[in-house]
Amino acid sequence: MQEKNLFEYAVIRLVPRVEREEFINVGVILYCARKKYLKAVFYLNEPRLNAFCCDPDLQDLNKNLDAYVNICIGAKQGGPIGQLDMASRFRWLTATRSTVLQSSKVHPGFCVDPEEKLQQLYSEMVLLP
Image 1 (tube, rainbow, N blue to C red):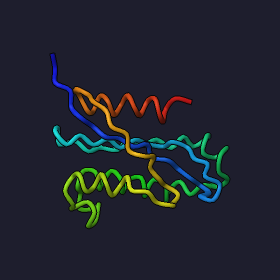
Image 2 (cartoon, rainbow, N blue to C red):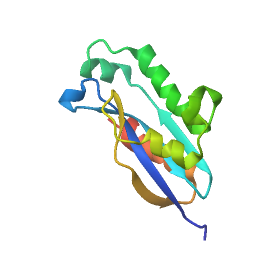
Image 3 (spheres, rainbow, N blue to C red):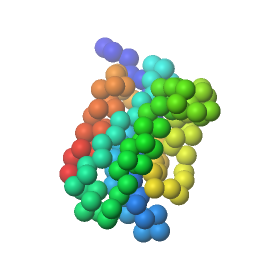
């Protein structure tokens, strides 16, 4: 039997008008300390986004979502936050904020393979209509 590992994840949400508190799920970030795993995946469904928000700045949104990815992998492009240890990067990315990109509360779970779990959550939380 394979050993299960504790993981934490949050759903990344696009909140075009913060005051309305309406959002679209656009990504998932998953952290598993034991496996030294931190990764974020995103998808901007443009037709859905256009129906939800008039005239979204897709270039700017993609740039901001790329920052999540760069911080997760600890890339130089992730700036000072990208140079923190993995747990601190996850906590910073999932901190509560009132911006256009926000995260849900952090949820824990157990999995064998964090990449497989991330793809499952991504499919369920972002890709499904």
